Structures are given as structure tokens and as C-alpha cells.
Length: 290
Image 1 (cartoon, one colour):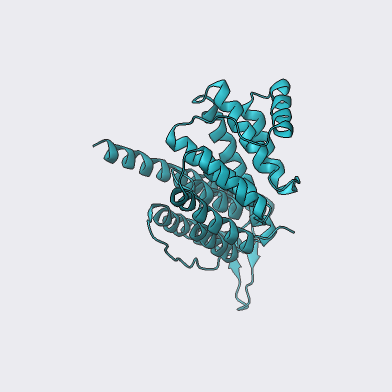
Image 2 (cartoon, one colour; image 1 turned 120 degrees about the horizontal axis):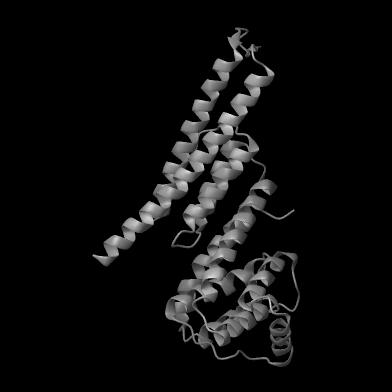
């Protein structure tokens, strides 16, 4: 009964995300239509056929097309979010205004990260949607990074309420050590520094303690986390060390040592690392940094 209730709650949350997206898209299109009508109240357009049509009628037709396209993309996105096996959908080409295209990509990220992790299959679908909408790859990469940044920030805000001060300090140290695992700070790792600050309540003295610990201690602090949070942190640390597009021996050793500190055997470590690694590799291939 409890499992059914959770499933219904999750489905309602997903439907709400999609509904909010469609509402924002409709608002954007309505604003565009009103602006167009105000500037060109009696305009006509002549497509490639040579026939003349009232611009307002053409605008209404294109608006319906865009709304139908967004509805279908979100419907397929919902199916993917619920699927337990990889699935493939091919969105029809539909040139979109940039703001609407960004809205769709951001919504898909939220949909795919609700109660689960982003997978390689998710990134393939996002890439197909972006290509169909005419979005440039660097722009899509930026939208994805921004959406993931906002999701991480909200998660860590909630996480702080579940951890005591010692647990927050331990997690902050692990994050700092993950960033330093390859002995250099890559620009792709900058975004994770804010999560360290969040865990430490933006307290400069605590941040300095973390820096001092990492500089002086080779090992890890004691980490006592509930199993679900330990798994999440392990996934997150794996993402951190792989975010620069490389995964060297030092980073691999770090991840294995953290897994051992969490009490995970090799089988459980691989079960966490492999899907994260696959998703990160596909993301890097589809949306390379310039």
C-alpha cells in the first residue's frame, strides 16, 4: 500500500513538472502572438508557394504546431522517465524559439532526475530533442549544466536538514578530496565548491578546517550516513572525479577507497560506478565543452 502511494505521488510530481512546462510555453507563445499583432496588425505573409496568407492565421497555425510538438516530446519524456529499460523516440523536426527550446530541455532534465539518476539513454533523447528543435550543442550543454546545478543546490539544501554537523563536515571533506583527487582544479569542478560551502553553512572557519584537513590528512574522516544517503554521495563523488572528462588511476583509487569507507564491496561499488560512468561518457561525447 505504501509503495503504491509513493508511485502515485511520483507520477503526480512528474505530471506537475510537465504541466508547468506546457503552461510556460503557452504563455511565451501568447506573448509572442500579442506582440506580433500589435506591431503588424494587418500583415500578410507569402511562403515559398507564392500564395498570400494573413500573418495572424499563419502565426496561430505555427503556435498549434509548437504546442503539439511540446506535448508529444513531454509525453515521450514521461514514458522514458518511467521506463526500466532503454527506449528510443525520434522527435519530429520543429524549429523553436530559443527560450521555448531551453524550457523543454530544462524540463526534461527535471523529469529524468526526479527520484532517479540521469542515464546515458536520457542524454541521447535530450540530444535528439535539441537537434529537432535546432539548438546548438554548446547552448544545450549550458542548459543541462544550469538545470543540474539548480537540482544539486536544492538537494543539498534539503540534505543539510538530515545531517548533523559532523556528518556535514565529513561530506564536505570527501567532496574536497574528490575535487583534489587528480591534484589539480579543473574549471568543470568549480561548480561543486558551492556544495561544500552549503554543507558548512557558508562558515569560512569551517571551510578553512576542511582545507586544512585535506592538506594534512591522506585518509578520510569517519563517515556515518544512512544507506540511501551513502549511495547518493558515492554516486555524486564519482560524478565529481569524472566531470573533467578524464578518469585517471588516482581518481579511480580515490573512488575505491571511498567505497570501502562506506562499507561497499567491489560488486556494489561497480553497480554504482558503471551507470554513472556510462552517463558521463555519453554526456561528454554528445555535449563536448568548447
